[in-house]
Amino acid sequence: MPSTVQQICRFPVKGLNGDPLEQVALIAGQGLPDDRRFGVVYGTGTGAKRGFFELTREEKLAQLRIAYDPAGPTLTISRQGRQVVTANPSDQTGRMLLNQFFAGFLLGSPRGTPSFQELNGSDRDAALPNPVSIINLASLRDFERVARQPVDPRRFRGNIMIDSLPAWSEFTWLGREVRIGGARLRVIERIERCAATNVNPDSAERDMNIPLTLRKGFGHSDLGVYAQVVDGGLVKPGDEVVEI
Image (cartoon, rainbow, N blue to C red; front, side, top):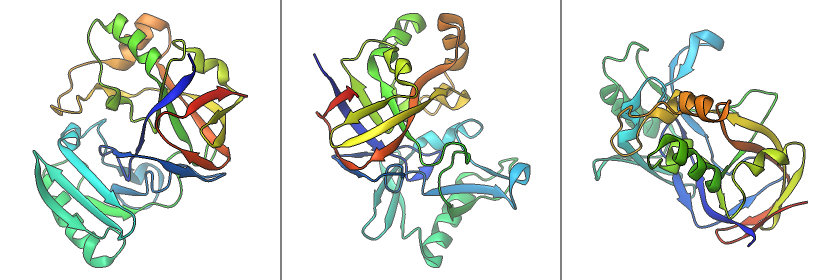
């Protein structure tokens, strides 16, 4: 049975929940359009003086749901089923509204006052620009076996979820190319998991230690792979995934 795409998801705001897509047109040398385009920033400058509000330290961010319309662009944030802010994240007035919301939502954070910003390029370092993250659901099921409980795939924030591939066989793709729908990608790197995955995407509580469970069960803390788009093309759920 061929491996197929099960779900596609972008994350317009770094650190927040994802926005499922019915299809995506990948472009060579780029990640998913609008993926990690924005971020909620603390501090100033670069390096240790500047960082992002993320689930690693601000688990309450998992309470938020977002919908993004690139045509506006328009970003809508909801909490507990209620819309709390809708704004154009690319103009001054929209950013002011978003800043006001996050200032209240993250009030008291030791990281200081949040600033909603449009990011330049990928949130990854220069060694791996514009990655697309791929999650093999069979590997996740094998992890569930070790964890002895269900594990929501949303914890791993994958761009492309695939299935019907043997567990962990995606790691054999390193340095190789795969065709996903109409696009061709080169698999570059395994994804090392951090404490952000410990946060339950529904309850916003830290209820697991996923990196530790991976290390104990498999001798590493990796789940999923990063790839870069070599040839662009349309990708949608149901498309086959084939190693070239």
